[in-house]
Image (cartoon, rainbow, N blue to C red):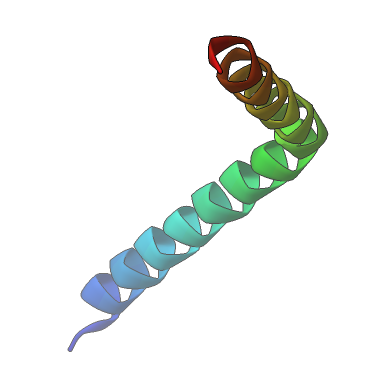
Length: 53
């Protein structure tokens, strides 16, 4: 393996790693909102089930 291909592979690896880190940070920032919305959906489902019985 020559230096050029090694350098390109390292750049690609660090690019993918950076993308993964940014996506993980974005998910963690939105996680509280996602949890609240999931709770709303569950509450609505329980209410609908109670109303149908």
